[in-house]
Image 1 (cartoon, rainbow, N blue to C red):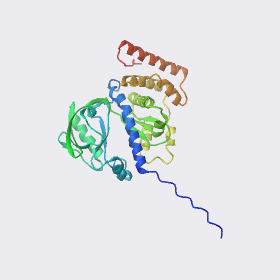
Image 2 (spheres, helix red, strand yellow):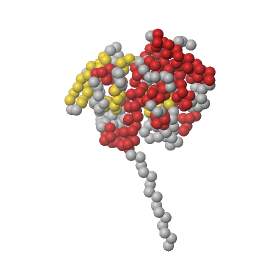
Image 3 (tube, rainbow, N blue to C red):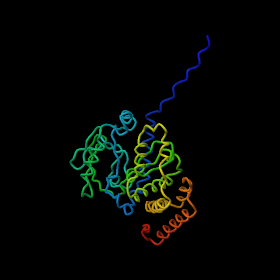
Image 4 (tube, helix red, strand yellow):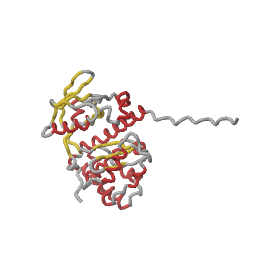
Amino acid sequence: MPPLAPTQAPPALPDKVAILRSWAEQQGRLYRVAAPLLINNTELCPRHARNLLGFTAKTRYAYTDEFAETAQSALGLDERLRVMNVLPGSGAEQAGLQKGDALLAIEIEPLPQGRGAERASASIIASELQGRSSISLTVLRDGRRVVHDISLTPACAMVIDLGNTDLADSYADGQRVMVTRGMLDSVASDEELAYVLAQEIAHNILAQEPRQDMVAAIDRLHALKPPADNGTAAGDIPTYPADIELRTRKLALYLLARAGYGIDHALDFWQRMANPPASDEFFTELEQTVGAIAARKQLGEPLVPEQP
């Protein structure tokens, strides 16, 4: 009787706790790096400018039912909306709102719990914000009710999200910005990540209407369970025409400068990531924009790009 062939052990399942914690940490990094770009550029994003509270909150169901138990054990989430990220420089941060605070009420309006709480609460909060410059938010912290008076923060109201693919890419659909896990792994610093975010924020500012191909790509990659093909179909999205991309990157340079990010290495980064690389003429125009921004800073002039 021939010996039995050794049986192979089944592939190890990904650790749900590690996956979820990594996802939350990466989302937090995106939010932190995007914060100055969103807060300091309302003059340049008039169609997107809104007054915001300046935080994100989630329940245990935010990452789908499959991860609900893990979200509770790994992230401390439950039926109530709990603060996940506080926008640096926002009224929420200045008022002392903290990660982990459970949302109880806005003004005197109780906030819902359980499945669907995020969407329902967003509607209630949007209604309460109308015509106000500040608002009262009651939270539960360490078993105590705490009331915060939060000044609203003018900002470019765009959703900043994480894309679940190893491909290094980023997307903008007119309202949302998505940066993939692969891109987060590719950038060498938060400043390089800011270059990616600024370009996509600029795409949204300049967009005349939503890009449905980008909408589909973001919807597809906005999940903890990655697509079966690891997102390769997203590479089929047409690139922007050169004239639009030039306007976008010029605007992105101003967004970065106004947000306090350095721009000396932005052009080399974009050139390195571009496929195909930009033409010499394209690159020269961007160099001129960098020079114009430096001159405006030196003269104390507003950092506002000239209209084409």
